[in-house]
Structures are given as structure tokens and as C-alpha cells.
Image (cartoon, rainbow, N blue to C red):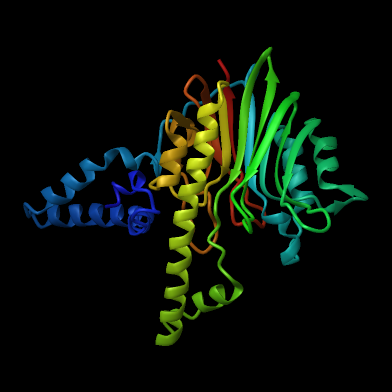
Length: 337
């Protein structure tokens, strides 16, 4: 079921998505049992080996080695993507200045930020400060639509190269998740970059409080389990719908594509499988080791991605700092052929 989950739309059968989420745990258990039966000299190891061979292609989505490296970024694009979690401003842990320092040193050509907040900083704004210190003088921001006032929350793309066209779409009423795209002129060619943030789990403060009480008493354990399963179910279904919506837009685009974002879903998911179809995953192409990008309550999950058109080649993929966000910043160098 875990191997089949990327191909099953959660709106049709959502439990498959949950089994897919547990895929790394099943993988580890099968390896442990394989070793155990080998030590015991039991023929039962064949069953575990068969299961591992059957899903071998899914392993390199979790862990990979032999990264493709490039000693020079000349003639290539450095792309950075990051879920900034509003730069920590609502948790009294504002890390914008540390982020700005990192971006200044990192010197990307393209920067995609999810959960962006255009906060006031240093007598200016986050957008102006990033443009001032990074050399990326073009940007496109998509904020939440509000009935009154102007929202500062949204997703954004910064570029050193001219944005010649752009667009966006949201994922329905009352959704805080967004998608934008920008067409960028680079070396007399135009390519499109998407920045997406798919459906969040939306755990409430009470859910986090209950999570800490799991095991303390039966009522708390049952209550938090019900809450989380219901939210998981809705999130799986919504992400499937959103992924289809984005992919349909991508299929209409005749330009080479780079896709960045927080999918809020693992590689063994319908959303990832839908969006990565006919695309290359930078982690799988040029990463090393475990690919975990999430640092929250379920650490080591890979839910943030940079994908690109099959005509491109990526180098030097890295998941690095998270500051005070619950996501790591990811980066890669892309050669647009």
C-alpha cells in the first residue's frame, strides 16, 4: 500500500496516503527483520528482501549518495527555496536579520520564500532589504486576499534577472496556501519558475498541547489521535487537489520550468508524484545523505523541494540552515541548457 500510495488520489482512498507517510518506518523495519532473519539463518529473510527489492526505486527519494557537483556556478543559476515561517515574528524569535545575512553571503540568483511576511525592519521593509543586500532587484509577491486592509503575508520570488510576466492562483476560499509563477528572461531565453505552498496540516495550539500529553492518560491520547487523523485526512485530500491544479497549469506552459516550494508531503505521496511527473528532483540528482527538510514534531521528513525541467541539470543540492523556522533552507545550482 505504501508503494502504491503515490498513484492513489487521496480523494478516492485517503488511507493510502497515510500508509505512504509511514513508508520510511516500514522501510527501516523491513531492513531490521532482514538482518535478524539472516543472523537466525531463517529462509524468512527472502520475504523482507523481496519487499525491499519491490520498492527499491523509492529508497533514493529518502537517501541518496554520489552527488553531482560543479566547481563553478558560472553560467548557471543558484536557486534557494525556504519556508520562512513569517521570520519567527509571531513567536518572539525574529530571525530576519540572520536570514538577510545568510542570503547576502549565499548570493542566489533566484529566491523563493513560502510563509513570507513583509515586516518592517531597519526603517524599511523585508522586500526592500532583501533587494538592497542581495542584488536581486526583481520580485513578485502574492499575498492573501483580504476583504479589508492589505495583507503582508504570502509567497514571493526574487530574481536577479528580469521578470517579463507573472501570475498566480489560490487554492480556494479560506485557504492560506498559495501558488505563483514568474517568467524570467535569462540569456535571451525565457523560463518559468513556480513557487508553491500546498495545504498545511493546520494543527491548533490545543493539538500541540495534547501531543505533549500522549501516553499520560487515555482521554488525551484518544482526543489528539482523532484530531490529527481528521486533519491528516483533509490535508491529504486538499494537497492532491492542489497538486492537480498546479500540474494542469504547468502542462499548459511551453517554457522550461523550475518548481520550488513546500509541498507539506513526502516523496511517497500523490502530491509529489503528480508534480514531479516529467521533472527532475534536485535532491535525487545532486544531493547526498538523508534528505530531511522538516525540523518540527516529525523531524527528518523531506517535504520541501526544488524540481526542474528534464532539459536542465542540477548540481550541489544542499539542505542547510533553518534559523527558527521548522523548515530547512534548500538550495541548488541549475544549468539551463
